[in-house]
Structure formats: C-alpha cells, structure tokens
Image (cartoon, rainbow, N blue to C red):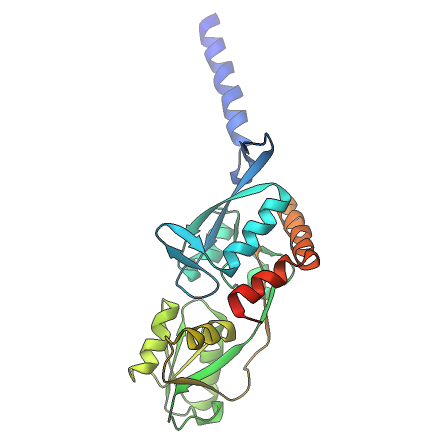
Length: 258
C-alpha cells in the first residue's frame, strides 16, 4: 500500500508540472547564461518581401521584425509555415503562440486573437493586364476577380463582385494570383499594395499594372494568442523600441526601399 501511495503521489506531481507548461513557458538558456522563452510563431512563406522559405530558413520583413522584437524581450522563435487561412484558427485553438504574415487587424479577428500595435500601413489595390479595358472598379461588370483565400482581398473582391456584377475566383497561394491574370484566366486581382509593389519591382508581375485608387487603408499587426497577455505587452514594448532606435526604418528600407 505504501508503494502504491508513492506512485500515485508522484504521478500527481508530474501532472501538475506538465499542466503549467504552455508553449510560451518553454525556457532555453543561451551561451551567455541568459534565459529565453520559446514561442511558436506561424507565417505564410509564399515568397515576396514579407515572408519566404529558402533552404529551410525563413526570411523576410515579418520574420526580421518579430526576431528583432524577440531578441530585445528575451524570447526565441520557432517558425512554422502555414496556409494563411489556417493561421487565425490555429491561434484560436492555441496551437501557436503568435503569427506574422501581413495580417490585417480586423474586428472579427480581434474577437479570437490579440494584435500588437500596427507595424505596417497597407491597403488593397486592383491589378489588371496592360491593355485591359478595366480602368477602375466600375468596369468590373461580367469580369472575373481573383483573390487569395482567407484574406481581406477576398472580402473586397466579394463586395465588388456583388456591387458591379463580377465573378470571384479563389486561389490558395499569393504568387498564383499574378499568373492567373497574366495567363488570362482572370481579368483582375485584388491584393495588398506592398505585395503587388514587390512583385512589380522583382519583375514577376510583368505585364500587369495597378488601376484606380487604393481600395482600402489597412494596418498589419502581429497576432498574439489570447492566452498570452504578457507576450502581447512585451511585443508592443519591443515594437515601440524598434521604431525609436531606428531598427524598424532600417528593415523597412531593406525590404521596400523607402
């Protein structure tokens, strides 16, 4: 009976210890002896200035901003590549601690996840082929608009399609939007301006152009799971420091040239 009681007691202690270990509670000790907390972050590494994955390494503006904040605040980041429309559900179910993937701060998203202060001002634009008869949104009647699944661009495409009598096509990956219009399978695409500008700068959006005014003004935020209030506080403080010490401006110029 004594041995049985000891086993039960030990099992209870282990269960309590494991219960207290969430993703943000994983602690590492660096070579300098400093303790850092590991966070699991998602991004959508589909190319371009915000996020990319080459030879197993994540690169991009979002990656560098998060890593710079993490370094200041004593965190290490484990990155996971996810489809964009899977990020918010993963935050909601606490499968990840945070995410940076050019995510627009919206009320519906804020209902299930927290956001840092804005780290990038963006907006949606309408893109067509050179020589297209589409000059602005009023020319979309009977046309096909393509947008990426789970994005604000898709919401706007649906809104314009209903208003002007257009059709909407949904694709999963950002690079394929441009190919779809270039190949004549869709008449126009809607996407965030910085992504479009990056594609045009690199030459991968050859033969395409932006028409009309920006459709929206949007702010990107770093998403932090609802159960991580301290992480949210730390990341807001770190982001403020990046903007004050010139790190943010340096990264912005590196990726966007302005």
